[in-house]
Length: 250
Image (cartoon, rainbow, N blue to C red; front, side, top):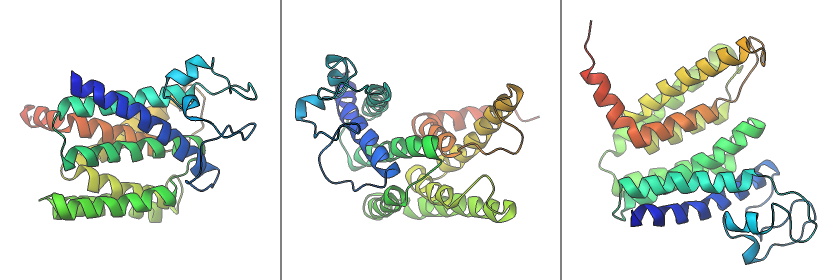
């Protein structure tokens, strides 16, 4: 349990980073510079930035202008803490693979927020992430070509959909995200994530139409479904595929 707890602590810190980078991406700000209150612009000191704890100590308000701090902050920190804790629990030995997968879920967290809020997958996040993934795979992974091919297949699939639908429902960001997911998950987990994302996205879209929250033809962000499906594939992909292969064929 010690690795999991250590991973949770690291994850909460990364959660703060995820929220900050997502917000700055949406505001088209530089990633450098100290954290500040978006309302009063006052720079925050270190004890204002302790993950989870600072939010509750401050009563969910800025120390300086007393404006409300969204509950999203601690939720993202807790969510990243749980994901990273689970990653350390399943992989208790520090290795390049573990470090890369911590990086992988951190990027997924940023993209989940930006696409959910503004249907945006920022180039400033996804392009360097693809580059870092390629470098990691070339140096540390024996299945570099498999992962590269998986990324190209997923990205190509999205590109074909964009051409067929003339850009309705998907954009260039999804193509780049598909490449990143293929590199991060490899084969066959990358393909599994693709299938799960379409399946879950279709169910969600139908539910929204039935509940009259959306009309047929209206666009919903697809990135969050890709992210959730990728996390499922990362943690349980092997178990899901083994179960499927044991399933009787009729």
